[in-house]
Length: 419
Image 1 (cartoon, rainbow, N blue to C red):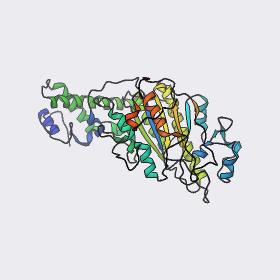
Image 2: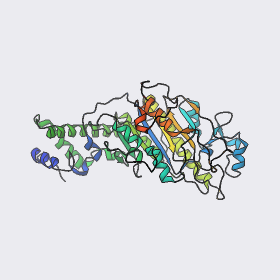
Image 3: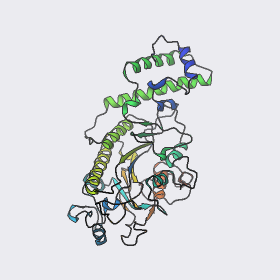
């Protein structure tokens, strides 16, 4: 569709109103802008970035109980040599690929929660991920996710910005599903912008239309004018962000590194988006685990640590928390293919400037097992409860479907009457 300055404003408004959406102008404006309305920019609002390790990360070779003889007995081939472990306490250490993350830990920018899981663990990738995403079992109604329910408690997004954003080519995580809030998925920053000559012509036309339009008494027309202006404003901010963003740090040329750099740009551009979600796939290491796991942990460690350092350099370090999880850990014993099979409990990681740094939770026994798996020490909803209450500032009970004692993860607490 071609737009020109001479196009009838009345014709445009009629066609727009008659469309399926409020600003029915096709693919030239991304769908996410169609949620436009008047939402004030709150530069001080806290932001949650979720990194999903898809496939079931081997937590035992991520946070390593190097001083425990049972670890090496269970893994004669896969155990990380003591000399290679990046030690962070007298008992625990990180995989040797996590040097960037270990530095973050030493700088007080990282919290490790050991032994996270849930009762009656399910080793199915699909079912276990759904449990983490929805906080509900399959015999319960599951039409939205825990982050989707959080988004539904927030002010209606009416300012060109979106409340949450999923970056990547994967299917959008169930955690973001909401009955009230639509969350867009984008593959790259360019999808947030009006691009090329067509985009420029459209921008000129819309701007002129909004400027020339008399104040409308009709609520629908007023909404359309407001939405158009907001969408243009958001697009302009993102365009400026892509052109002007500078960083002294070089992000890894990996998929996760590129995604997190885009998020850093959007945060620095002033978008009021509260939740960003990215995925790192490939953790289903049934065979030949050592090299694959090392590469994945290095990608995650280097990308997240660079992201945290970059945010600090742009003065956003104290309002962004990165939370990393996987749907389950691996079994304690290695298999015959130099790999590990589906297990249960594993570690979670939080990185940022507002944390109580260190290691939280005891490491589960490596001999007192549940069907060969580690018994969980902490319910994952206790981590979610802390994030919701102490970081995002909402009552977690309704979102999680019950009362879960928040872990002491954050230095500054939200309203103590909540939760």
